[in-house]
Image (cartoon, rainbow, N blue to C red; front, top):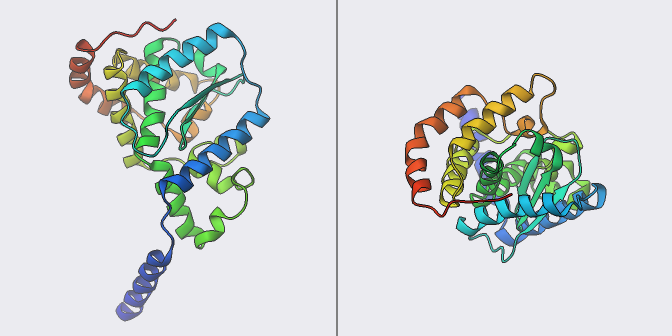
Length: 247
């Protein structure tokens, strides 16, 4: 039995090694294609004040983010929708749904969401998830065809919830994105206490309906506890920053 198990492990490792490794350009292309699909299917908010506000918060986060994934310029779009959600995609794409602004009510709370989402991108979590799906589904099969017609890729990129594909990030990915996001928002001049307020607000929102953001980004008490542990350091960064004033 032991020899059989060793043989299975060896075959699995050989299979994994035979898979082509995705590079940033490939993953960025997937992100761009996924974003174009969402734009083609979802109304875009044209209220100048809302767009200016969201882009102000997002651009400040991006101004302090060290992104070496090959993105030259980010695109930020506000979608008119009752989904409580936001996302960032490889390839430099950010989407914010208007209903999120009813939960993330302050610039600091919105910055907590966007910092977290950008954290997923610059730490290449989407790339990790797609690679995992390739292993689970037999290699190239998962990346064949148009991204928008492949729910597995949409889910791995982090935009599957609106298409009925729930692929939660791993606990380690979530923790990393939380801490990266906390640092980004503090450097960008947003009060990091907004991150705690945001996740507390998200928990309250589940009393009526589970927000789409929580379907792939669960917010247990352990997450809030972890943020509180890092809060003193983040506040120190915030005190030295150029304070944000997005309205």
